[in-house]
Image 1 (cartoon, rainbow, N blue to C red):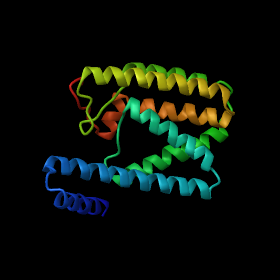
Image 2: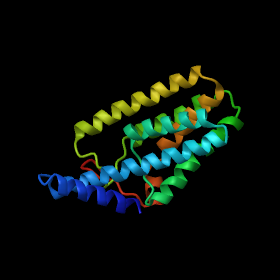
Image 3: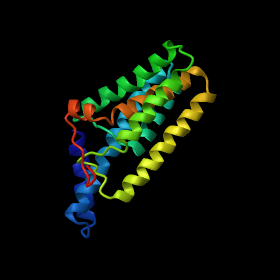
Length: 194
């Protein structure tokens, strides 16, 4: 249904602005689809978190996951429903674990594991979103490493529930870079650097 709505909007844009190429119209359609689907996913997660009284924790989880994904890359669900279910599981699973795990040095342990995984596998691209130049790959690698370092230092100074959320969500983000997870989810790497 969402794809029909975005296709209709894209067609209207194409009719209204005849100078737009078919390729550009496809890019607009894809951008609209992603914006609407991500917006709806975010609204549903935040409404659920608000109802459960976990909004501030869910905001941190979503923020950490989104920023990590931007620079580290990783797998994607194959369907919108799969994406929503996975996102809910990551966000609310992380929030639940953050409240129930009281291991004092959890952040240090998880960031060591995350750092190792990021060193070996970041950034990880997809066929649908390839990293096609070595310059872009290096840029994402540096920025992704800096993001992990910044999250680690933040995790040292915030209350334990927030530290746990940052640490667990970063671990999830880096596990999603690994060849094993790509194989299990049947995602394929793209770009010229694979």
